[in-house]
Image (cartoon, rainbow, N blue to C red; front, side):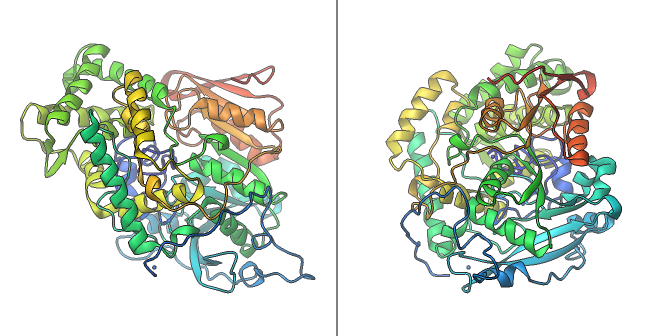
Length: 575
C-alpha cells in the first residue's frame, strides 16, 4: 500500500519518503531503500499520503450513513443557500519558495523545476467547518502553454502515508510536451509530510510484521500491534478520527477551489487510485482526465490490503531468484533458482532460532520476511540488486559472521527497527483503521495465518498477520460506496505484487466507460513514468493531451530492456 516506504500498496517509485526505508513504491524503480529514496529523504511522509496535536481520549462517534456523494458539510453549496466552506474555497494562497532550508533536497529539486509551494487551510472536522483547522501542503509547476492549457493535474503517490509534494518535477518530465499544458500539483495529504503532522512516536516506521513460526511468535506480534494502537490513542486521540480517505478527498476539493479550478485532472498511484475513486464519487462532475495506476479494488479495500497477494509475490520472488542465480559470482546465493530460494528459507529459519545481528540491528523472524517482501515491488536490475545484497548480508549474519550492511539496507532496517520514520507508520495506520473496521479478535488472525502459512510459509504469515487496527476505535463514517461509471484510464502490470492485476480488471468491469492499459510479463507496482514502457507512457500521455480514451483496452508487451510493444485489444477481456 508504496509510495510509501511500507510494504503496503503505497506510493509509486519516485515519491519522496518520510524515511529511507523499505518501499513497495518509493525510490524510482527501486525496491529496498534506494538512491531515489535517499535523494528524496525529505519525505516525512505520512501524517500524510496515508497514507498524515490534543486531548488523550479517543473520540468515538456513531458510524454515519454511506452516501454516494458528498455530505452537505463536504459539498459546495450554492451561494444562495450559504457556503459553510466559503472561506476555505476562496482563500488566498501564499505561493513561495519550496526550499525549507539548506538540507532540503526535495525543495531544491522543486525550485529547479520552477515549482512554488503553498499551504491550504482546511477544517480538521468538516462537520464543524468553523472549528479547528489544519493545513495541507501543495507544490505547483505552472503550465507554460497557456493557449492550450487544460487545467490542474493533482497527484497522489499512494501510501497511505506517502508524501507527494516532491513529485511534480518527475511527473512533468514523464508527461513530455503535454506537461506544458497543465499546472502539475503535488499534494501532501492531511497529516503527511509538510502538512499538519500526525506522529504517534512509534519505535518503527511500519506496523507490518510476520506472525512468526508458532503461537508464541504470533502473540508477540499481537502485543506489538496493541502497543502501537495504544501509543496513537494516548498521543493523537483527538485527531485520529479525522485521518481518513473521505476527509482527504474533501481536502482535495478545497484545494481545487482554492486553485480556482472548476474541475481537476488527477493522477493517482496505488492507494492514490482508491483516493481518486473516493473523490470522484463524493464530488461527481469535478474531475476531468483521471489516470489510476496500480489499481485498488474498492470492494477489497480494508486494513488487510495485503491478503491475496501471496501468489504474485511468490512469482516475483522466483523471478528475482532466477536473476540472482545468474549472478552467483557477485552475490554467492546459488547457481539455480531453487538454490537461491533455499537460501531465503534458510535465513528465515535461522532468524526463527535467534535474531540475526546486522550492524547494530537485530533482525528476527517477524522482520526478516518483511525485508524480503518489501524488496519485491519493482521489476528491474537496481531493485533486484538491492534485495540480493540484503539476502547476502542476512545469510552472512545467519552464519555468525559480522556484517556491516550497505547504506541502503541499513536505512531499510532503521525504518523498520527505530522510530525515525514513526510518522509514516502512524499515518498509514490511522487512515487504514479510520476508513474500514478490522476484526477485533486475535483468534481470527491466528486462524488466517495458519491457513495462509500452509500455502506460503514465507509470505502468508506477513499478509495475514494482526495489526493495530484490531485495537483501534471504530471509524466515524462508513467507507464510500464506489459504484457508477467513470471514464478513467486504468494502468496495471500483470505481475503487480501489491495491487494485483485482478484489482484493475474488477474496476474495469465496474466502470464500463473506462479503459485498461495492461503491461504484460512484469512483476511491477506502478508503471506510468516508472517502468520505462514507451507503450504505456505514450498511451497515458495521448489521453492527457486529447481527453479521449483509447477506443478499446490496450495491452503492452514487455520487451528487452523494459521497453514495451503495444497491442490493442479487440474487446475488453475481464479476468
